[in-house]
Amino acid sequence: MSDVMNPAADADATARRNVFILAACLALSMTGVTLIMNISALAGKMLADDESWATFPLSLQFVGVMVATIPASLLMGRIGRRVGFTLGQIIGVLGAILAAFAIYLGSFELFAAAHLIIGFHNAFWQYYRFAAADTASESYRTRAISYVMAGGVVAAIAGSQLASWTSDLLSPYLFAGGYVCIACLNILTIFLLQGIRIPNPISVGISVAGRPLIRILRQPTAIVAIVSAMLGYASMSLVMTATPLAMQFCGFVLDDSKTVIQWHALAMFAPSFFTGRLIKRFGVLHIIIIGALLNIGCMAINLMGIDFNNFLIGLVLLGLGWNFMFVGGTTLLTETYRPEEQPKVQAANDFLIFSLVAAASLSSGVLQDTVGWAAVNAAIALPVMIAFTLTVWFKVAQGGRAEAK
View 1: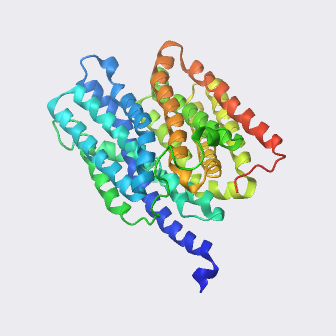
View 2: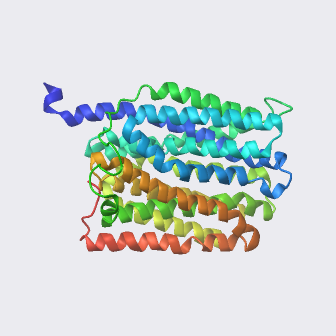
View 3: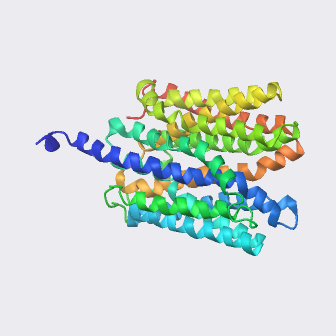
């Protein structure tokens, strides 16, 4: 009787189970990403004939995410979340093993191809945050999204430690052990994913499911959601990618930049334990606006000096700003589509986001090398102000009532 009388409570019980599993899966996936961030450039430098190509495999990984984002979402719209996520993890196992094999062979080209495949894998698990909302009631949806993102806290700590422990695990093939470790993380994730309970998809394809995509994306709410997440993520990627290079140029050692990046990663994901509650209390538009202001604060701190504390405080503000803008944008987007429209809207959203993130990642090192740290930070002023201005305009235009339901 209680289930009949209170279907929202029953849905949220399922959602909480899904959130717990998806948060654990995100923690494992993000741990793999953090591990790669620590070792890929070093392995690339070891394998490449020209050291200037050392970061190319990592950049190719972002390209892989961009390319696979739309196919991954549409495929899950046909076969369901659990099967789709499992397939993504299998791709990750293959990519990680291929990377380890490339190190064994000493092949830079094969190593780069492996990172492209790992990028395909990353495109699938990026949808964990949306999957958390699939079975949640409107009252629990914002917390479901933010709780899943909180799984990244584990990665902020574990990824760097695993990089240290596994670098010479398969000596003399340095860093191969790290990729074998990533394959093991993916296999563990496959087992966890079998516990999620998400209904079979309604959509049967991009051309026949619901309203035309362009009509959905032209909604002011959708524009604000996508622009906020896209510009917030790209700005974060631009500054974060350049930070180790800038700190090295300023005379800091590897442990210093590692400390800054770890605190940055914690600032990215730790707020997710309460971001959902903040959105429920203050409204999603307020949270996005605060996120933009935090990014402006990051830029100001970084432009004020090049002491260790400038880097540390600036990157912490950058992580907080990313969390508020990305989680806020994701939450707002869930209010723009019907269930049958979900795959194509989420695919378009993530394609736009990761296209710009890939461009930011590829250009970050170039900007740092050619025009310096100050220019890297100044470069985020315009995109962040665009997101800020658009969100404020939307809030005023809606009379202060345009908040996520």
